[in-house]
Length: 210
Image (cartoon, rainbow, N blue to C red; front, top):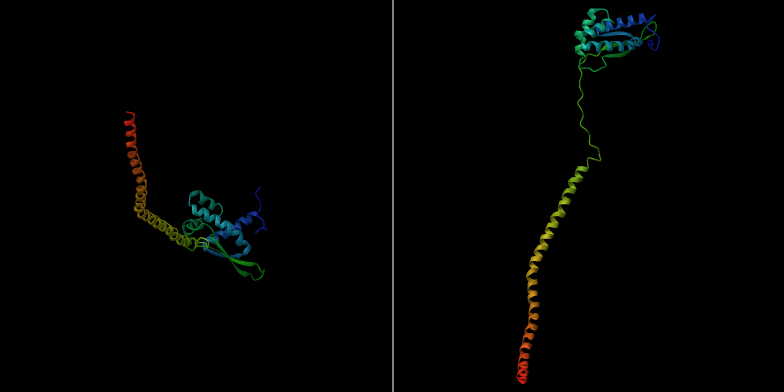
């Protein structure tokens, strides 16, 4: 069993309500704007937008679905040929309801329901805003980059200085080596002299033994 719509009925029965909404939808598609009570306008909006969705499809099955609600073929033709192309780029919200006050006599709240036929204006996407935390990060990195490069140049200069100092000290070391070699050579000469002095004694002993 279908679930009934919440709220009071607009007519004496369900069939009367369907016919009343169908006539309101036909009048809306014909005149593009109608004035009715606020309750009827709110109940008409989902039906009218559903019929417009069928009209945007444009096939035969959709046309037959709309004809099952609105029996006037002229209104259906106008809906498919004139209204649907104007709403082709709009993804929803085909109707607009505007409250205009109260009716004289029964003080019923009135509203104007109309089709939104204005061209769709697409909003351009705004660029992403950089947060306060990320914005100063770039200058900080740029500031640290030269600081990182400075020690490298200093280290290279220090190495070069050490190399130059080593090159300068190399001759002094050779000179020291030469000075240390001179005293060492002297004992070698003394030993040679001692051996030369010992040779005549041996010769004398050899002569005595002989």
